[in-house]
Image (cartoon, rainbow, N blue to C red; front, side, top):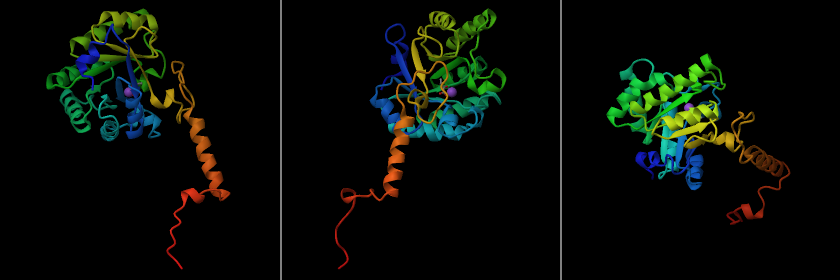
Length: 266
Ligand code: KIV
Ligand code: NA
């Protein structure tokens, strides 16, 4: 498995490939596809639990899914998201929740949204927990920001660059940049010595991340502008399930080869 240091040293050398996964089979396939990092994102709330927003995701949800992902990908670096509200009720409470998630899930790193997480990040890093920051669109704040591109104005863009530097100074090992203009993402990437992982942030970040169910079109139907679909699992799954249904109805399944025929009655 790559270490935090291995991943940090990929900056300026090799693109970092990150993909979300939330359970045993998806993590196993991500590992087989040689993703550098698996993100157990709080996007799991919407894409696999059917929650309305990231706000419903709990610390226990994150632990449950991160453990399943770990079982599927024993040899891949795993980052787990700190969920909504888990580090906003006090720095000590945030550090405590982070330590619980890190310890219980056996993830390799935690991700915290927003520049206001810096005190908690400092505490976690002091305790020995590697941390990934997350700037730009931070979906846990959607009630205030909406789900749209952020930092489109100079003042906000300048602030984001300062925030990125502050994250690095606080000891973050990398950061996600979500839904920001590509020239800003480039500037941020050049302004810090830790890797930037983009989603909807253009080509200049040190790595890319996409949501598993978006890039494979599995359960999701409306894709954001920045997602490229690499497969269409929706049709594959629908076709398989419909064929199964039809063969049961028409008594084509089970057939001879799927039946035990040892005689136990005379
Ligand atoms: O929860 C998530 O999947 C994320 C990525 C989109 C970066 O935070
Ligand atoms: Na997230």
